[in-house]
Image (cartoon, helix red, strand yellow):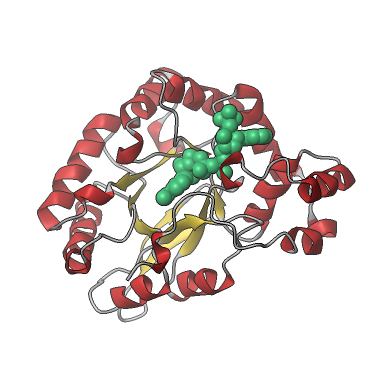
Amino acid sequence: MRISHSTQTGEEKFEHEIPQFGLGVFLMSQEGECKSSVLAALEAGYTHIDTARAYNNEHEVGEAIKESGMDRDSLFITTKLRRMHATGYEEVIEHCKKSLELLDTDYIDLYLVHAPPEDPEHRAPVWKGMEYCLEQGWVKSIGVSNYGPAHLEAMRDYASYMPSVNQVEFNPWLQRPHLFKATEDAGAKVMAYSPLARGHKVDDPELVAIAEKLGCTPAQVAIKFCYDSGCITIPKSSRPERIVENLASLEVDISSEMEAIKALECDYISGWDPTTEP
Ligand SMILES: NC(=O)c1ccc[n+]([C@@H]2O[C@H](COP(=O)([O-])OP(=O)(O)OC[C@H]3O[C@@H](n4cnc5c(N)ncnc54)[C@H](OP(=O)(O)O)[C@@H]3O)[C@@H](O)[C@H]2O)c1
């Protein structure tokens, strides 16, 4: 999938190709868990890893990539500026350099502001810092996460480059049409986090019934729904067999059950939701 950054004059800048599917590595807290999961994913054919400073495992992602022997250019790394670090221009530069060091890489493919900086006064200088990192080539593309329609709209006043991506919770139980449209209107792609609602909904009887009709697993239905909705989709698993199962979602045809999957919508937030903060 192609991502880019819209300018005030309607141009598209810093275009970059992003794999529409990847591995999320949140909540891999045991030492070595992230590294072994990333190695299993690369072995299975994943080419995109979504980490964050807040997950405290960027170094393990870097180690796994080195150990895999894979060409850096064949892989896509997303990481995020931690919310507590999103306080100003200089802080962004400092923490971007730190992430490059932890990941042991010359560049980050996609660097996201993890959530709208808590102090609204910090949002413009933080974004200017992100744009500086982009212009330096330290990062190939920049974006936001957990930005609501109002946060995106406000960016029009201070962004030279609008975000290429807005990473938000999205899954069959939380389809967010308003936020989806606002993200697209900003020129960004939706990146679906928690496609399995953090695992809370994998045993949902209605989902299980749909999966039985389709002849696939419940997790595959939810993941493919996000993917077919046009989202960059990043399910997390630390188990090699599920890592393979989740990638195999891409082969599943869910079109005959699309209406039934859409009907699972229930406005369920599995984690946090800063999109509605002032
Ligand atoms: N920007 C943000 O604020 C934000 C917030 C949340 C997440 N994220 C990103 O999005 C990624 C994915 O979201 P998430 O980790 O919250 O949740 P998720 O991917 O929706 O669900 C992960 C949970 O589902 C289980 N699971 C995975 N595959 C399964 C399968 N095939 N069958 C049954 N259970 C399965 C996992 O357990 P096992 O590991 O034991 O398999 C884990 O408990 C994160 O890792 C992170 O990279 C970003």
